[in-house]
Image (cartoon, rainbow, N blue to C red; front, side, top):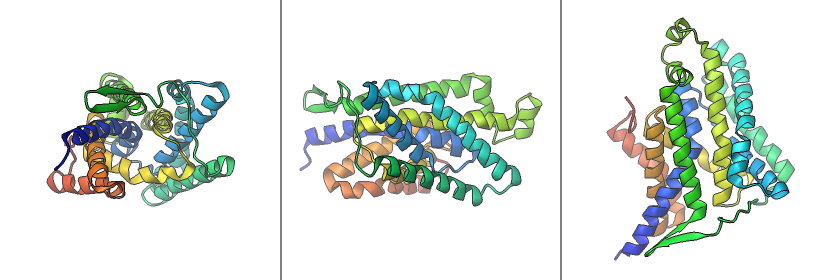
Length: 290
């Protein structure tokens, strides 16, 4: 017989974990869903963000969330540079399909190897007063190392949603892959719009990296665990749908938590793909796809 207390804790932990998955996946939702750029290197920028936060936390005692926000402009600049190299080398020449994918794989490999050479394969972690603390509501325990990332992810999702829906640049980002000519007629340069969009996509990695290293220790090769998961979340939520991405992340987080609790953590790895295949069989466009 399933314990109701155990079930409740698994569901709550899954919701909180899903919030974190949303933060990691938002950048992919923008790049893949709105720009048609298959950036498989996105998770390695999350790990790079984790190490940036680790260095500042260790050296200066800076709070992980504050450090993640501080590095946001830096990662935005990195994103703009990476996209411009990708555009000039591949997209401008119409070679973005396969060669562009190889480009991002190369970026992933270079960053991962660079981090490994610098920091080794030892796990790194950060310190903060709330890490290790928890709240309890009856039989349900809520770890702050999961609650704080989930709250930050909700705020990040809300900010991105409002930016894309309410600003001219945001609406241009949503339109750039649909009708570049119409965008030019409105006085916007599609390439510069994509610069901004890809910069924002990578900038979210600094915050996601801060959340990741709060939840648990990190090491360079961890990015591989998230490549399939973030694309599963982006596709399940509906291509380019920010709200759909968050909902899909929560669904996958709860599914993984329930699987780990009742069937063992080794089965949780396949959950994201299983949920994705099931959803695509029922609704190929995703939860919020048109």
